[in-house]
Image 1 (tube, rainbow, N blue to C red):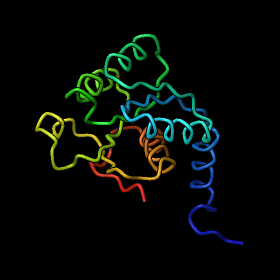
Image 2 (image 1 turned 45 degrees about the vertical axis):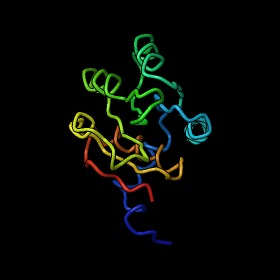
Image 3 (image 1 turned 90 degrees about the vertical axis):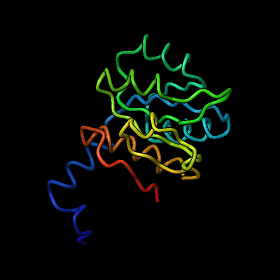
Image 4 (image 1 turned 180 degrees about the horizontal axis):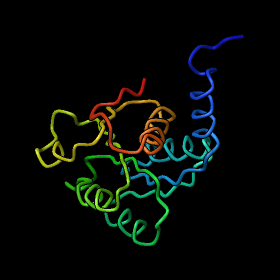
Length: 149
């Protein structure tokens, strides 16, 4: 049975490689239930997960890990904190990341200037993880807005 583009040689091989590779993913999210859901979705994909609830935790994880492939960053964290310090560190290391936020109208200019793909909350966690993996596998930051549908 022909399944279109997925069954064609090049695309099938590329998709199989993406699905079979083990990725390391940094998750920065201050909401425990969202973090847990993202963590489970990443583990279901076979990812090594580095969860953090603050910039301090995320930066400490990055300092101790040279093998983070991609990241998902909640933009607005507790106590007025945002993801900018972690995003800047990821950019400096050449690690692609997606922004995951429900506060689309309240982001300040510095966050908009991160020039990173954005997935609006709520979004299915498996789709958010897939977008971060695709971003890494595609080799860069890519489009600023990603649909997690």
